[in-house]
Amino acid sequence: MKYISDELKTIKKSGLYRELNSVEGSQGTHLEIKGKTYLSFCSNNYLGLANNPLVIKAVKDAVGRYGWGAGASRLVSGNMRLHEVLEGEISRFKGKEASIVFPTGYMANVGTISSLVSKGGLVICDKLNHASIIDGCRLSGADFRVYPHCDMKKLENILKKATKYSRKLIVTDTVFSMDGDIAPLPDIVRIAHKYNAMVMADEAHGTGVFGENGRGVVEHFNLSKKVSIVMGTLSKAVGSLGGYVSGDADLINFLRNKARPFMYTTALPPAVCAASIAGIKLIRKNPSLRKSLWNNVRYLKKELDLLNFNLIPSESPIIPILIGDAKKAVDMSKLLYKKGILIPAIRPPTVPTRSSRLRMTVMSTHTRKDLERLLEVLSDV
Ligand SMILES: *Cc1c(COP(=O)(O)O)cnc(C)c1O
Image 1 (cartoon, protein in one colour):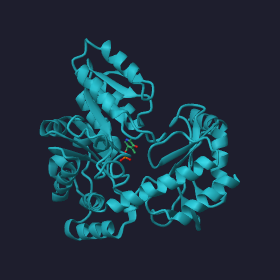
Image 2 (spheres, rainbow, N blue to C red):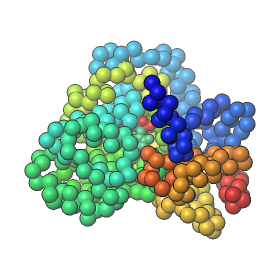
Image 3 (cartoon, rainbow, N blue to C red):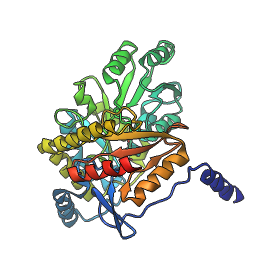
Image 4 (cartoon, protein in one colour):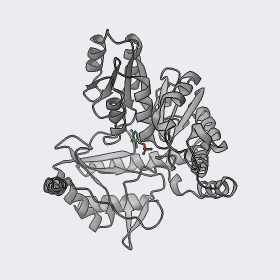
């Protein structure tokens, strides 16, 4: 067991040690930690739905009616009414024939990618894709190629040389979770079509945030008909928990029969599905949520530009300040913490070496005063 404490020491020495903060109240723009209140810029709860009164009411009603646990896998006896209502709601929202819900987005990626390609197939990823995509690719046993971030020439080169593969899958985040930029989806779709490859888009940070109706980046680019595999999570803007894939009925039936993280795990508690259903309805019916989010994003970016920080060019509510050195990023984050502001230092292996950063996320429920306070503290440090 000595290697465990040795490795921990190495992690600590390089400034990469991670610790848990214990949040005492509920999730909102302000978080209570060790009896003190902090202004938070680190949540993916973009629209404040994790703590919305209508979501909470939906959960209470569902618990009253359906109890808590699902008791078994979906394929045994855990498939309850609300799982199916949720899948129907997602399909309508995404404009797809059918959907499948997994307990988390992580499991949706791992299960879907490892079902769609296997030994003898090819899976192609953007260098900055989310860890759950990378893990799915590794687990699939397919040949795995990576192109530099958003480099369409390199993507095309990989496909040009891939004539021996009959099954080819391109997977991309639509909003890159640590940089906040968006994938050149129209180009990816065009290239995929030319070389007969499938496209899977991960809308984890796109859903509820982008597009005329909040459906995501696929809608933003008007590509709903052209991206055949749309994945996303219910854990970010929707404010709940769960991952999903939407597509045609054959794809979804295939995943129900093949995806091990769907087959061999207990179904989500039905009340969690009730929260997701309520969250999606709120997104569909309240464009004002998105509007106030984007107003906050625009204001903050404009003001940050004036402060001369080394901002990573972002196109979303994810706004990273590039620091470089991991220890320095941690020191900055600690300094902000002392001043009552929560912004996490993101370090390797989450991001490439020497690209440690402070990653801010904005919420629709931040007030102008909250943003002014952030700017005031940032200009001090
Ligand atoms: C957060 C995230 C996931 C995982 O979703 P969870 O529901 O939190 O497991 C997958 N892909 C991307 C791009 C993400 O940002």
